[in-house]
Length: 247
Ligand code: PGA
Image 1 (cartoon, rainbow, N blue to C red):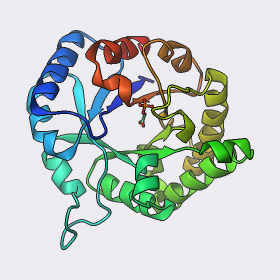
Image 2: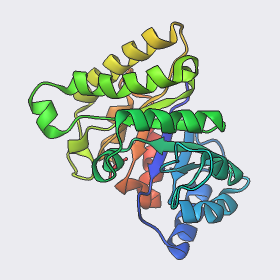
Image 3: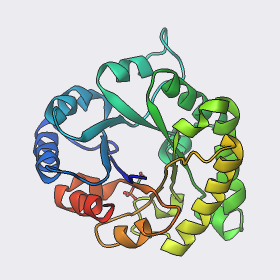
Image 4: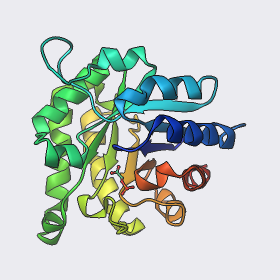
C-alpha cells in the first residue's frame, strides 16, 4: 500500500508564504512522488492552495470540519463546503482541538461521520498525554478514542485514516521511538481489523515531531503507513525529504 504523508500547517501561513511553499512542493514532487502527499491548510487558504496545486499530485486537506451539515452554526465550516474546494482529507480530533476546544470522543466521531458522508476522508487523531503514558494507560486511551469513531461509523470504518499522535510528542521535538510507535500502531491495527472484519487495510499515520532525520526509521515500521507532519511541513525541503523517505 502507498504511504501517505500529510502536512498539518496548523494556524500558520500567509498568501505569500503559501505561494512559495506550495510551488516548491509541486516542483519537488514532479514525476512520481511514490507515495500520496497532502497539505492540510487553514480554511481561508483552501481556494489559494487548490489553485496552486492544480495539475499536480499534491492533495488538499482541511484541519477540522463541522459535525452539522448547514445552518445557524456561526464560525463553522461544513464538509460540503470543503468538498467544493477540492478537499480530499480533513483532520478530525486533533489533540489541540480536543484540548483547547473541548472536543469529546463522541463529537470527533460525529465529525468523522460528516466528512465521510460528503466523500471526504477523515484523518482521525488519537493519542495519549504524558501523564496517561506514565500511568500505563496508553492502550486504554487510544482504544477508547478509536472505539467511539468505530461505533459511530460502522461499515464505513475502512474508509477512515487514523493518526497516532502521542500528545507529548507534538511540537516538542520529542518523538516516540520507532518501537514505541509501532507498538501502539499494532494495537490500533488489531482494533481496526476486528471492526472491519476483513482484510482491508486502513492507513495508520504517525504524528509528533516527525522530521527529515527521523522519518525513515519511523516509516520502516510494519504498521506505520505514513506521517502527519506539523512543524516540518512548513519547510519545503524538510517536507520533501519526508516524502522521499516514504517511497
Ligand atoms: P509536529 O505536529 O510535527 O509539529 O509535532 C504534528 C501534529 O500535530 O499533527
